[in-house]
Image (cartoon, rainbow, N blue to C red; front, side, top):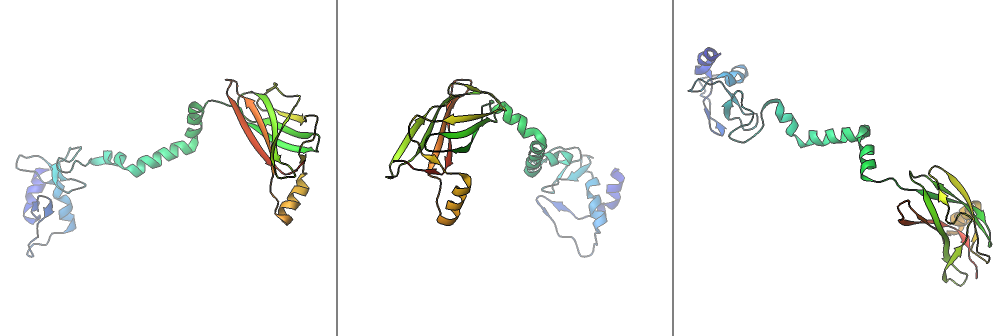
Length: 229
């Protein structure tokens, strides 16, 4: 292909380092001829092309520009940060994140309480283990304020204390301590008090449980209650 470069040489602009020289007004160089400039050979007879970044002359089979160090050819696609980030997002979005999360995070118990009802003597609620491991119920407490606006904690007993809560199962629990405890406000009345009078949840159900490795955790479930003396 060297003869093509020699034939077109009189019509091509002279290229200087880092910038392009001015073309003589007497010579009209078309875009088609300029596009063929990469076929020119240098003094050693080597076929040359332009760097895709700095436009300096480099060897046709060069993978990296010796002037600006830019990657050449199809390899340049994989050096784009945006493409790399989008590839990672695509991989994670099609399900790659879930296996990674399972590897990095060991399976645990995940207890979710739901208050059913109760009065000043007993609270009824359910505990559902949505986790992947069993847990042991340690104790149950009720935290709130008395009618005198004093903070109090009531320790209650349940038949499930010390029992194993299997994953994927729900357990109905009745909690009491033989004395008065804050009474549970039913959901309809609680919604009315919140909407009309701006009341908020003033009690918390505190559940302490132990994982299979012995590590204890505590969850807090806020609810509305009627205070006691």
